[in-house]
Image 1 (cartoon, rainbow, N blue to C red):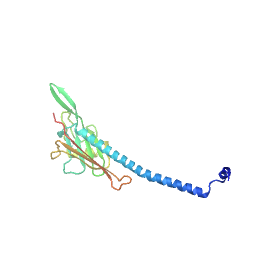
Image 2: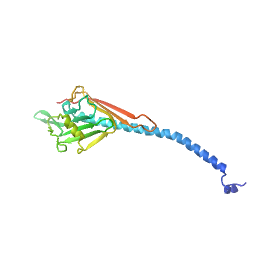
Image 3: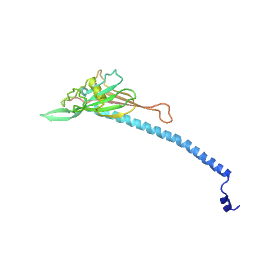
Image 4: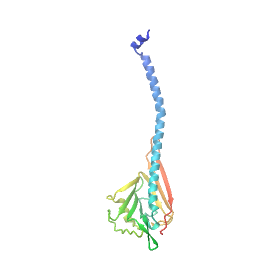
Length: 219
């Protein structure tokens, strides 16, 4: 039979079935190789994103704490697990006058709030001109020690906008070497994030960051 007449006749049923079987086999092999690779890639991306989020959040709170002193940092009691509130009065600069150097403190209060397992870590900045009216007197000549009730009000005030630093926080704490709500150096910051099980895994993903820092001297 000539090539022309064979082309006009087309493919036989057997040839079509063989071609379909080979195509299906190739697709199956490709699928078997691609799916594990895609799962590993998605898992790696989820881990990297969670780690970056944890380090960014820890870095932000450490940066605020390094601009304060022990008398300018207010904490929830060490025995309390949640919620956790941290209030920080930051140093704005220094001024020299008459041969003496004076510290100038910012007219704002930075508050970190965490309500318990699974809730986000939120950062808010309160000023005397913003709600709520707490009756606190911000004094640029000294840091401010904030009562627990005021810390709670700032952290939970819906009218005061906040920035979510980390989501799905399993644990958060800021502890000083001393006891009570006035910390002493070094401070230990602990942040644990938790995510639902990634593709191909049954256990949730967890990542923990711990930082230790020394507060600056008052003078």
